[in-house]
Image 1 (cartoon, rainbow, N blue to C red):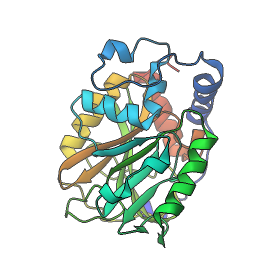
Image 2: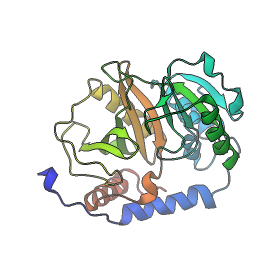
Image 3: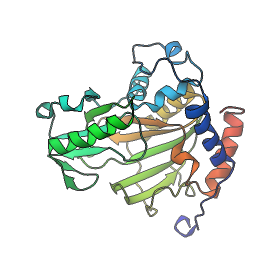
Length: 283
């Protein structure tokens, strides 16, 4: 039974490759000359520099790239570094704020009439601006995105369920489903691309396993889009999607999830096999 599987953190070959990749991408490789591209750029433009996939760690670039290849994304209300210029009066009652760079839930606001669903706190506009100002000051290329708050398949504004696909050049090794009730609260489940339950892949999230996880109505379409984006990306990547009242919506690309930490021994073995078969010799 999946609920009785004893989980172990295991630092194996897959984790070692992710840590090596992080060092190469962000410390050893020559910096990218063009940091910002749009859906109006050709695929050749996107791929015109070494290790071009680094561009897609920028969440705004990732949205543009996904749109270029037919995936839906959340509507963009505002972008920039001068956060004092955000026109809160023009925003709907529900909106999302997130930085273009960063991992996890850092700097993310899921606002519903002044209430952040992520940390269960009310924020004034001035308090939000102060936090965002500090965020952009810490990173020279950081920008802030103010976006549509996607509704779930039932049409409700709740913390969205994350569908995190572990992909290898068009092949899906597995996915984790994270049902969040907060930044450190919720449940998780693991499946293959046919929605057949798998052994746990990660214990990065402190969430208990959820039996009876409902399959989203748009799952087959989501899988199709994930495979397409993964094939374009070429190398291993985790691709996140949401199931919404408007079908599957792209979230982000993550080239080094958890910086190589938090994978089970089962995942280490499975992901290494997929890497060797579908991404041989790649970073």
